[in-house]
Length: 475
Image (cartoon, rainbow, N blue to C red):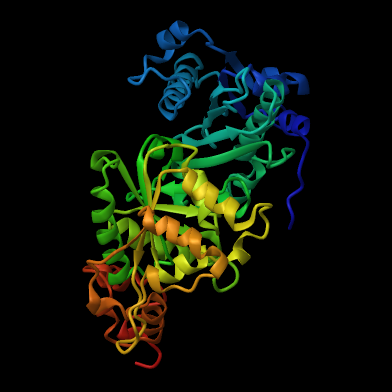
């Protein structure tokens, strides 16, 4: 059944008329736009225990404590706000007087667009709440990037999204995916972007935040999300800011010895670059949304299987909606001007010079390469040899249209495209798709194509359709 979308005023009023919802609002940086909707809707005295806005930094520090990095629009600041405000509710409101109340604390810390309009603004928004008087608290925390050109418009959008969050937490709590979608009720997606979200607490103990990251991309709320080896979502800006970035795109279905060799050898080349600091480097395994749709609709379990292995190997994973590499590089340049590297196979390099992928650009392939190489980018190419009898394919052997040949030669001459020469020749005939087929068919020998311990992970957690021999119907 399709969910009925209420107006912002209707949502605020419905919360106000609920006798069991009671809490506080603490908003910094964009006015008190969220609580304003509850006051305007009427009946707010039954919902709003307190509202405040500590704009002055000294006041804010006195209330919530100082941040180590001296910043105020951070996840750490938001969490301190939620912790402080919720603890005050418990201290100041007697359970004898309010035995049936479900307490909540809403907070946001925001920096809106500046006068020069070079900085569009961003912020953190969160809610700590309980769904029964004796229940432990739950948290929903997310980061927003604002896209509107006027501070007043950004403030209005923040107000609507805050109401959506509070309403969703209390009325759509049994369906986290739908709750996530509801954050954009009455908001056009071009106005604001959510690029990281956490669901925490007893109400969400079965929620995999990696899957919620995928939902952000599937539903057009952002174009890229990142999660770390522990499976926790990471704010892209926090991870990538002023870093040397090395990324490798693939299906990783499953990750094979070839993938690991590509990464190790590509890393060794990149780390030796004069403008690369090993201590300031971020390595990413990238999976595109298009890759996840390789067999039609996105299979969420298949996605989690890939993520499970990569996280078990200690890798950081980027899920993106960037089919073309130039869009990926453009994304990285939001956060860094340092040298970047891409590791790819010969087939991917060939596609990079295929003009059909750039028809939506007015400047075509030249515009795309202008974006690619206006940044400090290096491409490391892993060779291909599909069969033992086939000829080895490298960057110099790919077919390029004559009118683009000069472009390729210019890049190669300036060492922007570099062949990985210290590859392992014994693994070039390993392909993920072949390994996957053998796993699903219950065949043997597929283990030899995978890095150490990956086969154990697949067996133990029964990933990619693996079924133990004694459980197979044909056993």
